[in-house]
Image (cartoon, rainbow, N blue to C red; front, side):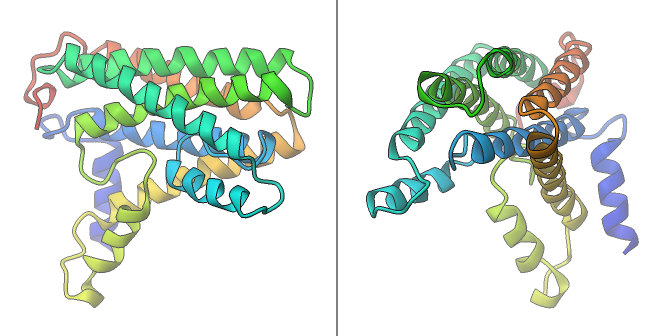
Length: 244
């Protein structure tokens, strides 16, 4: 029990000479953002995800089979926006290939722009979100989350993908002691899953029982804090800034 708790602590408060520096807690913050925006998109934009693309592929199949409440075009727009955001994030990452801090700063700024734009559009649009306004929100959020995923992939911090939890949860079970493993990084993996759960829970509660755009406002604030935090390390030359 002590080892997982220690793992959680070192993820949230890395040691000064940790191989990944301040990246783990920042990626945990982005994982919370994922939960917030996917709660907003699924509950208020018509059963579509803007961060978890596996779900959208399945939703497309559901809609083609005639299942109610699923929109083929909403999933298509989300997929295309996500791919475009990932392309943009990849270009930003390739601009700073030797410095992971600047890489994250560039993509975080890009994501913040799109999420803040979505928050503003959501605030001025009428509910329920339909028509062009709905697709605009899906596109803006998909662009932002695609950029985030591109950054997380290039940063390559183990078990902190910010969106995909399937392999993370698999690792908890497959690498656990019951499977003959060492329980390595179980604390970090559970923390990642809990972060997305927390973001989704807060997003659902606020979207359904308070204001529709509160999840996006919270996501915007977290992203702004992330940008400020990363900016302090933009000139760092510590080992963690170099690619793995």
